[in-house]
Image (cartoon, rainbow, N blue to C red; front, side, top):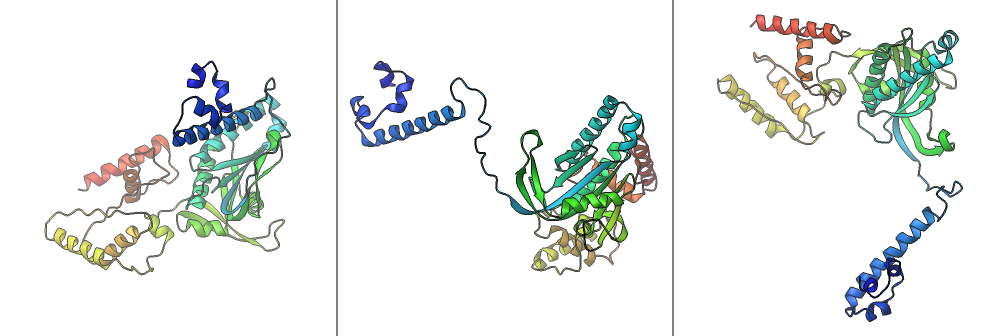
Length: 372
């Protein structure tokens, strides 16, 4: 500020030296050092701005080297989605009309998979390549991919188009190398090296219209969460060994994710004190004293396993068990746990939707209330 008052302007600041600061009356060494560090930062900023925006030239230097992005090995679930009958569509409709259909299809797939943290890697005309586990990984990426695939089948089927649309999908999980930038300009994309994209694309060819086919590794990761059919080993182009494939129909009737993904045969270790406390509270409740127990803690410490052990311990006692489960995939539905419980209490048609499903749930609730 004193330099400016002495007749300079702000362009002088990056050029000030220690001697200049002494002349300006900055006598303390510590203050001079702080000011010199700030001046050095000004010089760096000025140099960066000058390099990124040359005077009189607003266009970027296309030939300038790009910062290197390091590729990484990671577990990835890959989905390949294909629009059924796109070639006959192109023969029957004007290119502009077909473009609107394909654009609506692309938007539908992109928006649907995004709800399950899917990353659209590339559009191949009527095909879509989607990654689950990149750029952000989740412990349930395989499950997310399967749920997204079922949702895509449903969503595409509801699209307004000159004729009904359907898709076929393939999903595969495994180790890949992801992160390399390939191509240039508008064609640039994040590449994946490994057999999973090819396997997903080949599995897609096995699927019937409106169907989802998954690989063996994906099936192991989803446990019993979905109703599936074993298609057996399949010979696929590009693969020396037959690849076992499975068709996914819909979500299974298993109530608990713990039951679907884990085995209760795993011994309960280090939770005797907590289990004894729960059993004491159960005895008090049986004696007419109302009791509520909240079990809370970080994910993975054994809360579900503890409640399963309690359920097993009191299996011979007369009681009614009501279980309600929240879901990260239904965060926009506050009553989802209750709707699901009613559906399981009186089975509702699994493929019912909208008003029809609402009527079914309402009738189930009324029937349950009438029996009390």
